[in-house]
Length: 586
Image 1: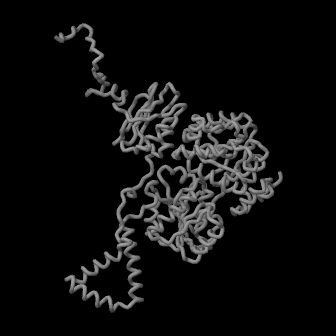
Image 2: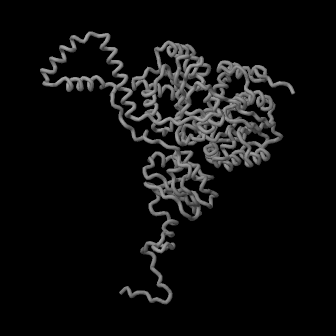
Image 3: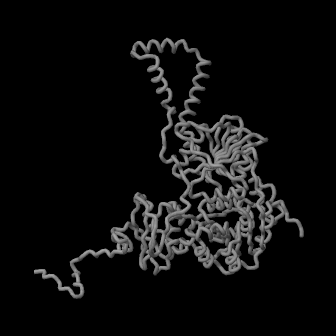
């Protein structure tokens, strides 16, 4: 067997793609890339068994981009991913690889993003669609996405997708694509469902198995911090104020977020600059030069912009947005600990991103230790320490005679003792940057999701009641072929709500009910109204009464089910029980 080519120029890829990957710093093809690119270029089906972080995104993106017909403005490649984070990352990778393909368009589609924005993106005629199964099926039901022209379908992290309960959605989507389309399935494991799908939908696939050999440097301390998404920026500020560092590299997921995050940090007094692919080469080089010289201490960058970045003074890397695969993670933290120096890497992970953290640990074969959230007391102590150092240095350099005389004069005029005057001067001096940190409830004791969420049952049974919930009605029921998991998946995907905050879901023939937090924002409810479950919109609304199932099954003191009497109406009369005469109403 001949040894696979290790240089991208030898893999028969289109010249614009080779130029793009060379500029991105890809020196040679990784094993999975060298093995997958030739059969995918030939139009063969591929079954890839590889851990996250082995480089599989480039392994399927590059050959499929080589076969794109740029003159055909309709979806030709569909990539299904289990999470919105991975969908964004894969879409950005396609965009980076196809930067020299004139007119190339890629469109990420996932829950939580505005429909109006996705409609406009789809009308532009993207060549590649990357999305999560729930939102892709939603667009199919709305008839805003036509997959009849798809020539290749990619299932990325298929085992994770099926573990999350998307098996029916995936098969329904596959049924919308042509029978002769090419299929590439990538999975870290081979559970029975994956075997069944591969046998059913793949035609004589080329099977490729790659063992992950990723590793990280021993001189890099790796920790993670559990941070709710809404409190990430405040957590970042606390970390920056309490950690000791020389230079810092903060990784953010998108080009827009690098600019926004850098602006917010600059407003807090940090010496920071953004670094992303939208900047000109001259601007990027100037920013890196400033980081090297020490004229800027913090750089907020995307993965693409920071590829190949080599700055010795970077002692801390912060993953503000968790990467979708471990290859990106390893590349990120490799920017610190250069030339054998000590480095530290901090990973921000929200409770919903626990599975991504676990996949990184599996791929790197190195567990990450949990870091405690810096307390507001520790931030206050750090600020006082820095103020003390600054004050000492200033007093050593400047003459204090004028200010000493002024102090005695102010003490006499204002009738203050020396302690009162010093306290007032300190308070005035720290006005722009308070010495005392403000406590934040959002950052106190963040925890992972409860590994055992409340049970949601279709018929009857016990469940753990949630506090401060309201009952909502959904205009989809069992007659529409809907199950509990369909509703649960739609709500969690579209709102980002964690499952522990969703109460019981009950399915009735013509409608369903769900318990949601009582303070759910109005705009979120309006968004859910338009979401499809199966073939119908949810049209969710707050229930005016109690759940009829719950009302009919209230228990009496002896613990037996107790029927609740129905409310009497004008048009109905109570029928007398057998053997008993009705009361005389006269």
